[in-house]
Image (cartoon, rainbow, N blue to C red; front, side):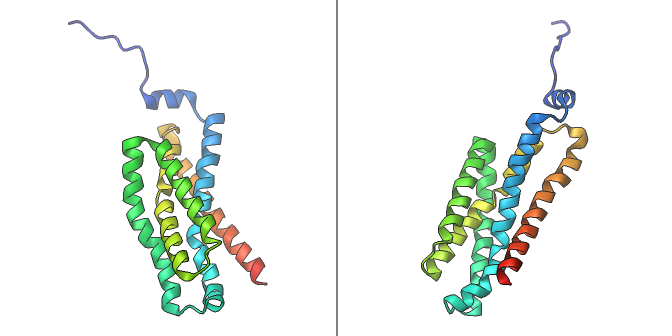
Length: 174
């Protein structure tokens, strides 16, 4: 069996040769929007909690439970979405996260009572826990030599989402 000739590239070699181009810019924008909206949805209750407290006359315990349910959903969702994206692909995971997170977020805006809001925010947390899929997906298209730098850039979208949320809350609170 003689020497086997290998006329090809590994994925990492191909990414290094291609570099960072238009596709990666679009992928960054897509993953960044996912991170941006994830940040806004997760921190939303810290701003609307006091308004809900007076509007629906909920107790401080109920107000805290509302935030807790988001993180309980995230606890379960993180494992679920990790499995889904590994077993069925990032595309399936991203679609599921988008449908659940944005659907639950939209419907929670129209919640008629506390109980429905708790359920919807739990579902939102379950969906938002898949936010790591956006990062994984984006970084799969980045050359290994500068992935660390692009993690930092992608993380900035989370910070911008938090800042925008706080700014909107401040403007509306005036």
